Image (cartoon, rainbow, N blue to C red; front, side):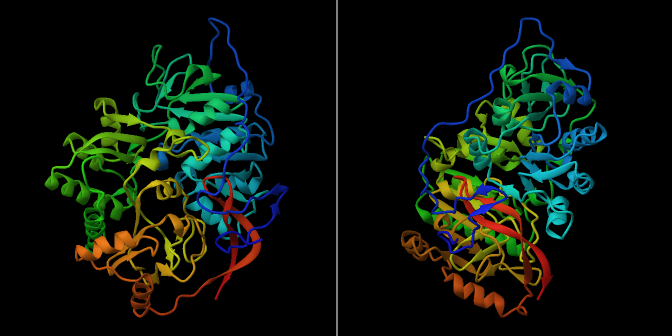
Length: 515
């Protein structure tokens, strides 16, 4: 069946009836949220166990279970591989992984997929695991499911995903199970991504390398959710949180894009007292964040809040008094982690507060402007962040959908070419975020405005900004390169891309060749 964007979506897949995307805000939730598991504890009961293996035994984890993890250590995570290795050694298989995201550090999971220890993955696969699934490695039992940060929270609360055991990497925890990510020997920033896992899982295991006296706070993971606490030597490396995509760009072309994006914000009418914004984690978005902060300082503007992914750039903006508050769901560098401990107005926010569609309020809906990246954009302003033009599944969704849906002005900041490949295409390989929630596409060759935002177009033209049709920017870029080859897709669906309300906005099919 075809959905609202004209994409073909199966009516059902592996026994699951699929709901097709009908529009960014078309779904009206009904009914009740999933029930949480009843738990109790007697006074004086000891929750502390001696090893991961003992925790696996204590939770009753068995073949076919769903186990979850957070990604706050990003490429420095050590817990996912440690737990899955232990399961393999104990003869447990057919596992479904439910991580908030996987990174290159999790490449060892490929061997567990080959052996059948891992047969299903619901979560973003950044790098080798996604490439393995795309390139014809052993197929998973069911297609992977990719969700936004808010969409994942919604899926757990709605009962779409039932977690058997949640393993929470906690830089500091107490013996009763309170845990935080901003203190301890190896702080990684907020770990509240998995708060919903800890609340709804049948069993929750906090894994820490710093067992501290009661009580540990802030209570990102609460004692009432925690069944067991395991102390290990290592849970992750904070120095590996920042990666190449989290560094401000030095490219003159990309700096021009960032400058145009900041100029667009300045001309938009939103840059006034109380202004709020979110910058993405890409190099261009980080540069745009820096430039917007400079514009705020020149104009003497005091913003209401900035949102992230915390970075040193946002911390500087807070400490200069340019915004009253940072709302932070994850730390992208060690400066942000330090600030979360030291700055009272740098506030931890969980994905439910951030962007849960099935709620009466999302912080993303309070944003004035946002800068986001893309692997592709098409002439209908649809955006792809999951696959490349070669069809490979290499990236997750993150907060892309959530932020784009909420901000008054969502700007996609992209170069027109990456290497010799065009970024603006007739039809994106995969739809991650629909064009109806994208307002502006900023490139080094000019700014394209979604036709539904004539108000922004008029403001930009009045300010003398280089406003152009997206078709014209694409045509100019196409003249500089040969027509690229295209991947040939087979019938096998390897992943579903969910919109933040749980409907399916696109599928990813296995690449079988090249034309």
